[in-house]
Length: 148
Image (cartoon, rainbow, N blue to C red):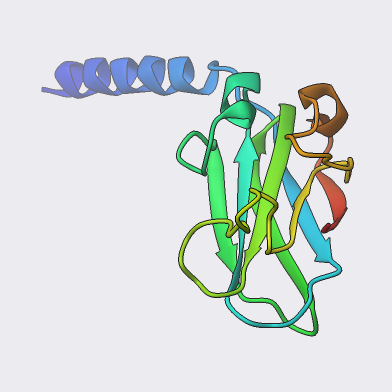
């Protein structure tokens, strides 16, 4: 009986040792500060993307993570936590009339504020991926995004 208990304990120890030997992915936080909103109506919808194809897709469906934040004093803030180190982009817009989409006029020009990581200017198209990408390689980074 004692021998059987010791045998079980030995295998439990080996199993636990095997689990602890697995590499742990390094993660950090991405703090997104949104500035330049027109008002405090609705929500700011934020998409965090970890692929180039996700960045170029429409909507937040292809996002790695997403958030919806109520603005305060014409600003918004959100922290994505436990994000694996790597390359990312952020796209966001101020959904003033919470209908879930970026409203545009009859010419296709957005009527609601929007922005991207690194705050590149968008002239009638989505900014190039390389202008918006950034690397998470530390415990926390802060992105200040000025909407346009």
